[in-house]
Image (cartoon, rainbow, N blue to C red):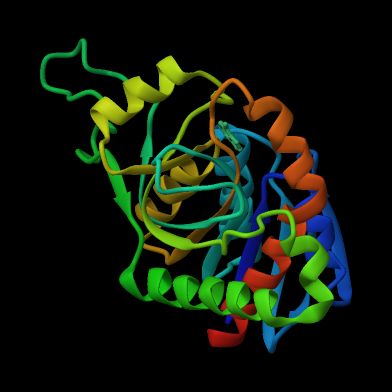
Length: 252
Ligand code: ADE
């Protein structure tokens, strides 16, 4: 199996690249594609950069030039549902582009992607189940391994949870209660917001290719988001990403 692994943060892909030996590197369009073998799979790893265009372009290159069989996208997200706390993990089951609006055209609904006729891209059940299991296993092992006690103090006394559900993506870092309320009105089941997942979902959906989106919650998308986010990224996110992706690969 050949797996394309992408992260929206350089810190995350750097942590992933420490896990296996890179055998070939190629720069295409300001992105570096790293090839190697990890957990008995051929892998291609790339720092996608931020936003939907950056993610869609990175995934397309992976599909067209590296012929990967599936995609794993990992990153951080702002928690929207009150059930989520910083340190929790979200596995995407559906992904929507919250900034897509062609509804002034009478036949198109708000959030609907024209011609595809859908607004929420589904993730295959097999990929959701595998990623949920990998994230659960990681949290369980992280909580019990004495070596991780310092990092887990970040969330103490709460034990991080793994959630499965709707992720919304848009080209905006959300740090406002008003914007959050607007999104929650249209998507009461929304778990978190980020800037790439639904673009990855659209590209993979159009090709019929399996994909996984894993997000760790770095902030609550409110007025404190911009200061919570870098702290989480530096101290926890990259560790989460590498550990969860490794467990997904093991189960593939
Ligand atoms: N990624 C992490 N936090 C985010 C937020 N608040 N909005 C959008 N993307 C994010």
